[in-house]
Image 1 (tube, rainbow, N blue to C red):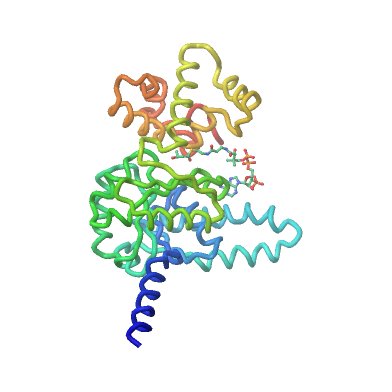
Image 2 (image 1 turned 60 degrees about the horizontal axis):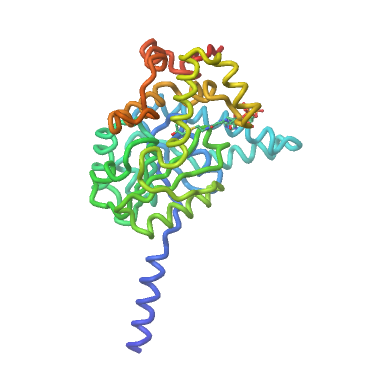
Length: 309
Ligand code: 3HC
């Protein structure tokens, strides 16, 4: 009997340890990335609460998600628009919104933060969430350039904290970088990796290094494109065409810079330049700085390297 009880307890404990399936997600930040993550998680049957600071932002995010779902459905259900509409409604039912993050996290398995790239703001947020969320809740940041360990340092759950880095547009881009910071436990890393697969994405494993894998290659490449243009060695149109037709990239570097946002690219390169001022790959660009100072941030403001309607 004692043996059975011991066995039973052991089984219970080990299944609790393995029970890392993530079902309820809180996404913080209703911008492009947060909305995209919400959409993909809801589409794959997860229950998602999208959180931001105002109802107006959340309304805009929900409208964006609906629009993006309709684009997906138009192709997937081209022969059956009625089934497409049902699909959209089913996905939307998995999404709710809130402006009260500390009450939402009380029953969530995973928090994915996709707010402004500011270390102090992220640390303050996670420090508050750490007190409100249950023990088992995993925290993840979608930071594109800050050290995950520095964000996690504001909490007492370093072992349950990792990076989940998505790519824009989230519904279309297949990759997720799963970041294992020095404190991230193997169990948390595995849970985040499995979660990324459950989203229908292809996860890759990353260390907590600047830019992880993609941005570490992509950002210096885009900066070099700007420098090439600044030196007068090619027009931005020709450089874009060259990389699309000569290297098979879906967008040229200037199109991509405008798409990602010039402020985001500047923020990343400035941070790295501060860390390694002698690294020529991280040198700032006069032209990029000028455009950002003029408020020309790319597609989202109607003008960056190109003008948009
Ligand atoms: N939601 C849903 N569907 C979308 C979509 C979205 N947001 N964006 C595009 N699509 C789908 C639609 O089905 C669309 O068809 P539709 O126009 O009939 O609705 C289809 O994609 C084709 O889109 P487009 O005709 O607008 O253009 P493309 O064929 O060029 O595809 C693209 C668009 C997928 C964005 C492609 O150009 C691409 O892959 N670009 C590169 C993007 C990239 O490199 N992203 C990574 C940026 S780095 C990053 O995010 C990291 C961060 O930390 C900085």
